[in-house]
Image 1: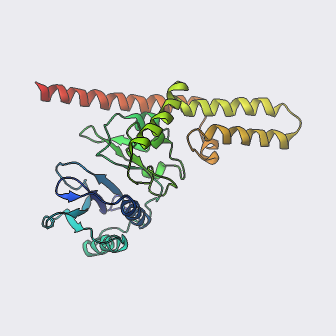
Image 2: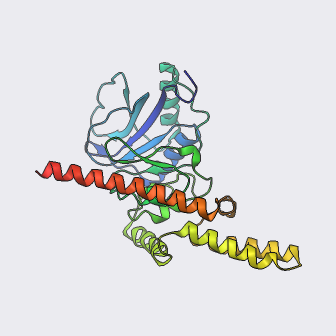
Image 3: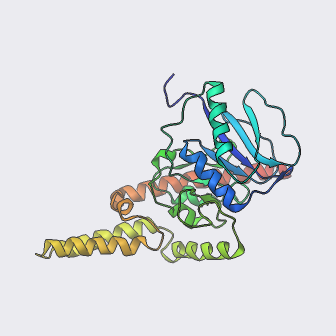
Length: 285
């Protein structure tokens, strides 16, 4: 069995029925602690069946009102107590060692976490991301599939999420870092989504074209140092709209590759939405 296919321990922060809500600061600190130890984490604030994903064991953490359910072969539980997230993270390490699971040392600390209590499965993140980070489960739900493709310090997909449902625990500011989401946050993030609409819904293409035009324009100048500086300024200004680091913009593929990737991502999103609508129709009938 390869290291990548070995079973791992996944963590779910549960705040649904039967569990009290976590303080925003504690939630953010716990997310950061778990992610820095390499554990993949999801957040759920609604009722539903809890089961482990294929080839993994699920550790469910929450401030349970009553005693948590008994452990099952692929599901364990941990009641969250106190204000220090370290004991909970240490417990996750203990469970991993107890079960002999693969140490998640290669898990990248910068990647998105979906808050499924806010997510409406609109597939905007799947349509937007050019790095194939997102995928669709067999049940038609959005999921983080290729987390290692995510670009460090880039929170762009969270900017286009209309429900503020995508978190990056190592991001500098809330609500993207996992803190409580207020109505002002939703309104402010919605304004950023409007940027995408104003630019024709293809922000990366606009940024790439702008960089290409700047490169063409300034490459004709004899002052190479000035041309380089102007191109750098162009990338910086273009990235400020979404908080995308200049190195991420500089690593973007060619306009032709961007178009192909964008079309592929949008096609996957449309197929997922059509599948979900078909399921709704079957349930209604």
